[in-house]
Length: 331
Image (cartoon, rainbow, N blue to C red; front, side):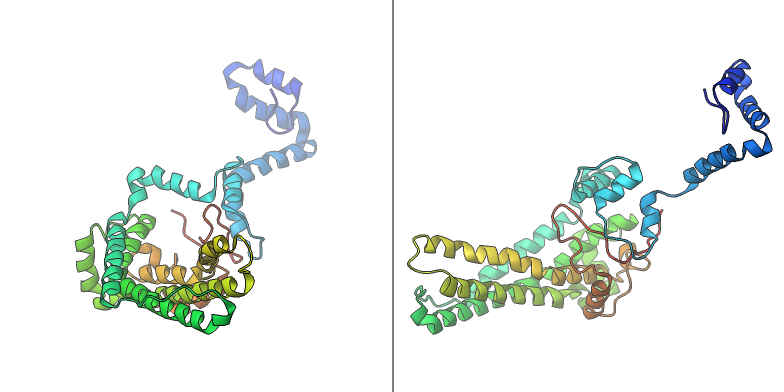
């Protein structure tokens, strides 16, 4: 047993011989044995340990220092708990939601999201029947580049029209779904159901409240469709040789690969649209200090760009902290 600051084994044995009053006598013995001068080093060590116990976790101290290197959520978990975390950031978020809200909390906003997807599918089918696309024979030879390009432009225009109409019809339910999800941050119950949410938005924001964040979503869809289809067409026409035995197989996967790449590049439009859907709507997650009050989606885009957060949440498993630390209240 060590004495409390500078004592060794002899002091521990003497304190142990004093029975139940050992703790106060250990402090007296340490000071008496070391004296004012010799006990200075031990007293400083004890004070340092007590000061470290009063300090916040290292991850929070690091977040308060500007200009630090980027870190992952797993590293923050390690610094706060002292344990090495091999669990991806998404799973840590899921674990936290289950701990606070139970498994039911993982399905916030599911009902309006399902209704939104159903409306989108029905709308696309209706538009496709109302404006059918004329069938054109498949053209892949380089000699018929103009004909094949005209076909791609026509198909993309038709697909863009269907996507824009379905987005406009389904976006109000998407807004309700997003607001139901972010209620988790402030522990609110403002949007408890689909019909009550519709009435509340109509009362507080009017019809335009259902279409907040619609413009960046449509822009992202349009850019995605045109870039994906045109890039796939040019790759299949110029990069893939018809004499190659597996040319047809490669062409069948080109559009799929381009879709993955373009979905990553157009992700900022999706992020900005979702943030605008919940911004300044009365929920705690959309108000300062959790989020600035944006005047438009362009203002939101510029803010995220200046903070280096245009691609936050784009990774399926891991998430990187922003370059500039943000200050959030801790409940």
